[in-house]
Image (cartoon, rainbow, N blue to C red):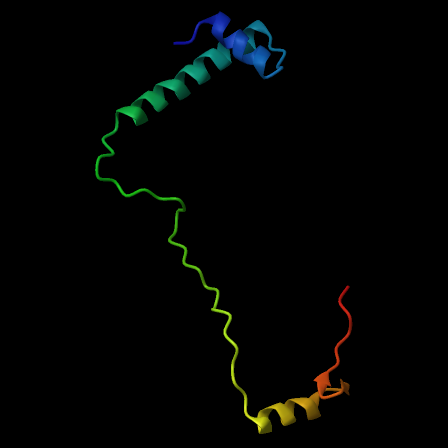
Length: 95
């Protein structure tokens, strides 16, 4: 169990002004936390899989590949656009 001085030192590091009663409460709470950490250290983790996230995450980005379009598809797209200029699709500036 943490001593009263150790608990006061931790409170000072955290810039907490604690009363004697609060120091006694925190002394018990912090000791419980440290005891639990010791239990976790004693657990056998040999062969356990290492996780970086609680769920498995896969990259969902597609590769950046130029797609070939037929002339008819491009012409349909141009006709649907409200503005074109020199065979390019004209869009609003974003910056």
